Amino acid sequence: MELIRNRISLLRDEMKKQNIAACIIPGTDPHASEYIAECWKEREWISGFDGSAGTIVVTLTKAALWTDSRYFLQAPKQLEGTGIELMKQGLAETPDILPWLAIYLRAGESVGVNPQMFSFNAYSSMKTELEINNIELVSIDLLSQVWTVRPPMPLQPLYVFETKYTGKSAIKKLELLRFEMKKATTDTFVISALDDIAWLFNIRGSDVNYNPVVIAYALVEENNATLFVDIEKLTPETKLYLKNEGVSTDSYLAIYDVLSHLSPSTTVLVDGAKLNQALYESIPARCIIRSAMSPILKMKSIKNEVEMAGVRCAMRKDAVALTRFFMWLEANLPSGNLTEISVSDKLRAFRSEQKNFVGESFGTIAGYAAHGAIVHYHAVEASDVKLAADNLLLLDSGGQYLDGTTDITRTVALGIPTEQQKKDNTLVLKGHISLGTAKFPLGTRGSQLDILARKAMWDLGLNYGHGTGHGIGHFLYVHDGPQSIRMDENPTVLLPGMMISNEPGMYRTNEYGIRIENLVHVIPAQKTEFGQFLEFETLTLFPIDQQLINWDMMTDVEIDWLNKYHQMVYERISALLNDEESKWLMRKCAPYKR
Image 1: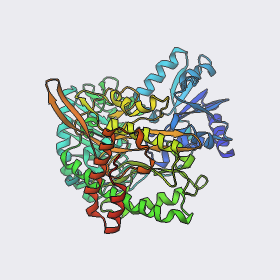
Image 2 (image 1 turned 180 degrees about the vertical axis):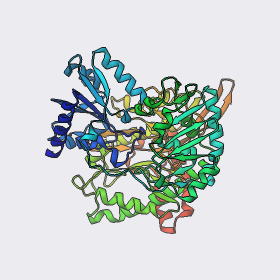
Image 3 (image 1 turned 120 degrees about the vertical axis):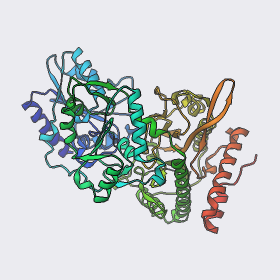
Image 4 (image 1 turned 45 degrees about the vertical axis):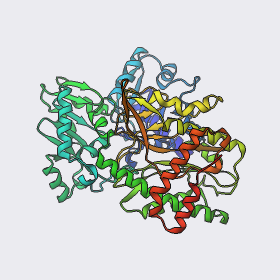
């Protein structure tokens, strides 16, 4: 890891030149994205850690990386030999970043951050907390002086996402957005989140791995809408489309100049959790700025009938691909030649045979045996292992189809499972069923339902460290808000039309991991004198491994749910399969009887 040590040394040299005592580098981009273009992977470049969540802090004498429980096994391996200390977020003994800085910095010293990489909210919070300890927060792009040879910005052309898939035109969406802006008493909305922009203008692209988005900014005003995008991404056809939808275009970085020339009488709406500090600083101080959650977030979280019809179509395609894949896996496992990488590649190949398949919705997690306990494990050549008929395979994968986005996790026994494995899997399944069958009043938040997925495990002193459910976009981000189901509080209530995952898990370090994930759709259940109640419609269509179930632990109600789920899977998928595939699926979906 000498390369990483050298990079940190170069950064420290630049910090000394600029009189900066510490530098904070997050794993994000100017658009607050989860998956980011290569040119913005600053935290990965300086540390070698490539997880989806984590922040590195470098002082003149120390370096530390903060990340959550998903990466407690992965991070130590990637940080080994770099001199970077792992700080395990969420543990009582682990200090947060700013209190840690307060220990190691002296009053009057400065902390440098690139304002493009921090949201306005995050920057303001940091500034306030550091000032309490008489430490100054400075906007400075230190890494631009150190990481000088970067990958170029992506320049692939954007394309139109047709109304036959979206159900609403960009003109209609702009009309609805302007109505929300009026309710917020604002006349200008600055948009930086790439999924918000893609959804609003019905455009898609290939600038970022797994997410079909376009690197751009946008400005929506009472009578104008502007897309700030590299001119090379536009074709004559997309220019005409945007013009017809009432959208003008300007160069990507021109937004800074446009914002700086806003009239002092302008009332500007920003999403402080997404808009980066550099853009915020471009808005004239005389403007009235209102910071609130982007109205687009809620608008796109509630899927219309056209979008949901597409999602159901995508689920059927995914099920066909998964059926063919698992048949192939069973047939080829005895060869002893299958590895985590080879099965991931094969699954992608089966998905790619389906109509309207665009790509994977995230990097497949194929975790065999102990690797299954690494929640966000991603096999690389150095870690790739061969599969054998003596442990569990956790397979978390998804597809991006023009029809919709999928995300499914299945854990299967490749040999004869142990009683402990069956017990752990059954606890996960009980939690999955408990949440999936919930009925709840309108106004319920995801955090209020989270215990349903965990109670069977909690009763035995067991738990898992990740959230239970995340929102899903429509041919967009596989992790899409604002809705979620997790222990952390989230003020967003679950509403009809929202899609969300149901994915409890169980992980035994150095042994195996288990997760069962279906996507569900919030729908009306019934209305009583106590108000409107909602429930979940299960969307994912693929059997759950029955050889991993301890049936004595299952109630009659749970067995009935599983039997009905498997019946639904078979009825909706079998007609799309050949005779051999249909018979295989029938065996996997066979009802259990006590």
